Image 1 (cartoon, rainbow, N blue to C red):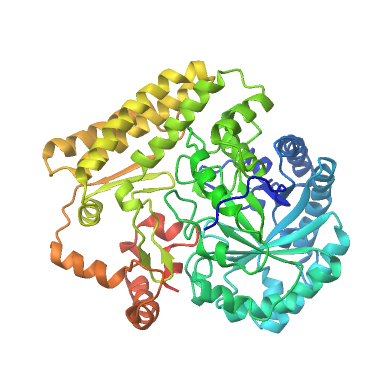
Image 2 (image 1 turned 90 degrees about the vertical axis):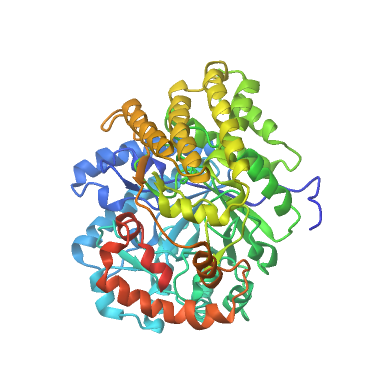
Length: 586
């Protein structure tokens, strides 16, 4: 790939999500951070006004900070909750009209701070009354959306475009009169959707930003990384209104990922997505710096003339109890730093992560020593790479069906898994066990040093202690995974878990990670495991005949039978959170 240019105009679209203000009053323990929790907003008009007054004040703060640090646009959810239609249930129309009036204040605030407004939307979100009217007939659905968008753009001229999520829908936890579904199931359906919808965007001079992220469901499930699927989606489509939006890797927001090949191959203007609130790395409870990771990606992106922007998720992502709010409270410092350094790196092509941190410290009037702060942050990036991730495993490329297997396998949102099955899998996939142990020892030393750096760096010491205590659990687990089995290692894991729970008791001021431990033996021979992995997983994006004949078709049928008869064999977190693991087999 050619080297990045030394000078380039700032990217036109520098987008930040604006949903943080809506979460301050949410009472439920585990929060779905994927979109505004409309079902948690009060129904009573007076209570709603009280809550929204606080949201307006917080949104003012967020927009002020976003503009200060170089963002040009802000996103809010979502089209279905802001677009009125005569077919909607009367009580739902009343609620939507209340939202419309309230959100108009937010649009004015964004405009005042020089930020363009984008509204997100799943492709098809509807109430029961709407579904009864139009069902799933493609022409009726598209005609309904065109009518809805036409009225919406007329009512809200300050909205600059719609971001369509095509590969996700409301999770199992969403209880709302308006629910979305996985509507687009193939590239051909996506092509028809764009052909039918784009003219209304062209008419109103608005942008249709089409997100390619999918969870692997249905034939369109590989759209985010499969170039052929992308070409099918865009066949014979040409429109100045269309922009693609892609995550920077071919999986979710993880480290160790190469640049998404579809970003390189995209034939249309493209926005690249980054995550500052690291949903798999503590969600801002402690530093999980992305400076060098995002600088590496930046250097590749700036060589691509069709990359027209970035989207930085400062609050969005994950089903988590952790609730740090970016730009709205001192506790949001780590997400705030990741957010601002990402946009700084892309706005200033020659800048380094150190430059970006110093710029944040200056703009934020940070009271600590920026040199010590940067040292602490760099250490945290090493911790993530060498303690959170198993580096040799993370460096592998493995694919199952339409999904790139995540490079982080044993930590999922707020859960740490320590078990024999995972030990057996790691034994098969990781050859250099000593490398893992060496990185574990080095990371433990860094954790101790980071606690000592907290005061001179002007960082909250409690966050560093929480990281250190969590890291102690991870270190014990890694020794269990990569050392010959012994009862002493089992006791070390159990002791680390007990100490962790004692440091951070349930119901205390801070939510902690769940440490899920199982030492039930998992017996499968090396040869059988080798054959199983060779059959099920592939190392290339290219599908094998085995994938097309068995894994993409027959396995879906077999899983549906298994799921119906043996639901409880699938872990609860995999069944109940988000859309559930079963979507991968659709």
